[in-house]
Structure formats: C-alpha cells, structure tokens
Length: 204
Length: 312
Image (cartoon, rainbow over all chains, first blue to last red; front, side, top):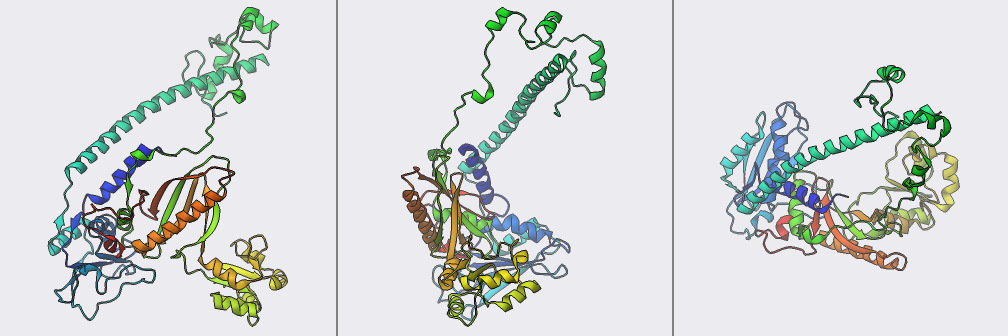
C-alpha cells in the first residue's frame, strides 16, 4: 500500500493541475452551455479540439461547474469541428440561478441527452471553428469572445507548487542514490552466491 | 541461475567464455579458499579450519526459523495528515475530470477502507441502492412463455422469455441478454439443448451453483435487476455508487445506504473478527481518489452549491 504522504503529494499535484494552468478561467454568468463536436480521430485537423477537451475543458468545468459542457465525437473527419457557446439572453422570467434553469439538463437518473432550445428563452449561440487549430488558439478565441476572467494562483498555491516541485526533485536524487546502494548490495550478494557455488562444485 | 559471473581474481564482471580459462590457470583468491589439508580430511566443513573455530562458530539460524514478526492487520493511514473533502467539493473535482463523457458511461465508485485482521471473515453481500447504477440489465428467462412463471418474469421486467425460441436464437448466435435465469422445470430441456458450449464461456449458463435456476422467477428477476454486489478484498470494500449524471443528493443517499449496509455486515461478524470503518474514498472512472470527511458541503467553496455540482 502506498504511504499516506506519498498519496497526498500525488493527489495535490493532480488537484492543482485541475485548478490552475491553461484553461483556468471563470466564464461570465450569462453563458449557459458549451458544446463541442468533432471527430473521434485526429485526422482532418481534430487534434486541437481533442487536446482542448482533455486539458482546458477540465479546468473550465472546475471553475464553472454550473455551465453544461458536452462533447459529441460522432463527426466524420471531413466535417467541421465546431464549438458552440450558448448564452442566456436577458429574460425577465429567469430566476437567479439562471445557468441551471431552462433547457440546461439538471442531472438526474432520467436525463441522457441535453434538451434542445426552449421556446421561452431566446438563445444566443456563437460558434468557434476548431479545425486545424491548436488548443491554445481555441482557448484564446474563447476567452476573447466571452471575456472570461483568468484564475490566478493564490499565494498558498504558489507555495504548494514550489514545495511539491522541490520534493519531486529531491525524491529523484534520493531515488538515484538508493538505486546505487541497492545495485552494490546486489553485486556483493551475487559474488557470494557465485563463490559458494564454486566451492560446492569443488567439494563434489 | 542467471546471476552474473564475476572474475574471481579481479572481481569484475566476466563473460561466460573467459571464466573457464581462469578456472584452470590462476590460483583462487576467493575468501572461502580452504587450506589443502582440510579439503582432504574434512570435505564437509570447508568453512571451519579447526575444531576450536567450529565450536565457537556463530550458529546461523536458518531462514525458515528466523523470527520476523509479520503484521496481522492491514495497515491503515493516519487520517490526521490526510486532506479530506466534503461531498460537493469531491464531486466538483470528479465532474471536472470526467467532463464531456457520456453521463451514463462514467461511474462514481466508493472505496471503504476497513481496519481488520488479515485472516478473518470478509464482508460480502448484495445491496439495492436507492438509485441503481446499472439499470439496463437485460435478463432472459427460460420458462414456458404462457405459464404463470413466464408471465411473472415478463411482468418483473425480463427482456426475453421462452424456451425453444431462445435456444434457437442462441444457437444462431443472437445472445441479446446479460443474464440468464432458468425455471427448475425447464432445466431438463435446457441441458438437452446443449447450449453450454455457447453460454458457458460467457458465464451465462444457468446452473444451480450460481443460483440462476430458480423456482420463483419473478422475484429473482426483480432482485437481479436492482442489486449490486460487493465484497471485501484485502481490507477494502469497493463498489460502483453512482453514474456521472447523478445529483449530489442522489449520491448522498446511495453513499449512506452503502455505508450503513457495510456497517451492519461488520456488526454481524463482529464476534468472529473485529472490523472497523476507517476511511471513505470517492473516485470515478477517470478521476482521482478523494477522501471524504463526512460532510455534505463546506461553506468556503466559492459559492458552489449542490445545485451547481448537479448540472452536467
């Protein structure tokens, strides 16, 4: 079993990687949904969207949990790779927690596919073309379009990152040293085994 | 056997071919070289040169008798140094890790770490969760479709009910179900139909040992459709506890039901082995494992409430 300090260190690295990094932005409150559609394989310029999904979208989802984010990977390679951002327009019937109202799928055991645009709220949808673009370009365009606010690392997080990095470097050095020691001990043991084996051979 | 060979004189690694040359020519300088007399007189006591040394030789205890105290319980971590999360915080991280995946494909799983001796009884049971994780289990029942058993099975939710038509379909290769039950009266027909070759490797062949040959098919179908099974392995009980699409309240109910069921099981066998719940860890198919501290939500989460965590 892995020891608790090791487990916590690994966990902290992973959690900090979700909280900070490329894609850590707080979106404005009127964004309701982000939907991405691209092909399952990267031929045809779909690598950018896929990387975006794995890296940036994770951080966006952490900082904006109320925004529905869906991914549809049924496009053919020659189809367009499109990200559509759905806004709520100013509607007097909207309640205060608008991202969850209306057609946004509130999770329950029956919800499977997201519902289409409701007739009550007039949706404003803007699209970004993602084909043949890197994930950082896609992110820049999204940020520009939505005027999202970047999430900066707090002082404690900077400190934690530095401590974890230091620990990692120290651990690598210690690991190399202990590997040397182990190799030396193993060599001595092998020498003894060989000697014993030869003595037994001589006695017989 | 594949140990590297070292040159006896310079103690450096040597290849297999050269050692034979050394063996013949150079005098041995290895530390265990005995004087030539004792080689003739005492062929079995190569290490000790004299009787005196033999008397005072340190008696090495053979490895099988060496007293190395083995642990009798599984190690548990000291949770005072652990970083723990409330349910809402944990779900926030896990939902972020699973973003974009179909809401029924990614599952949450719960790991209960127990403080228990290593060779005791294990916790093993079935449980119906308030919100079942896997609901689309297709069950096939082998019974005459017009008998009361067949009708009860259909009413309970079996997908395919019948006898001959099922045998035909299976022989053709159309196995469109995940579990198979058989009524005791139809067992003879089933054996005659010789489907073991097809269903056996899939684990679908009804048999008495796996409790899939039953008298009351209706109740069995109902029980099989909803129940999740769990067992303790090496001091940890693991079970799928929700789909990605579940809300925070649903998860809370499932977690409570599971933990209470395990606690009841532990109490039941407490006279044989003392078991104790030590740590609860929530994880998901693609996310990290987060230790839960027992609370639903903490105040300082930047205003992220249960509602926000429940949207996909």
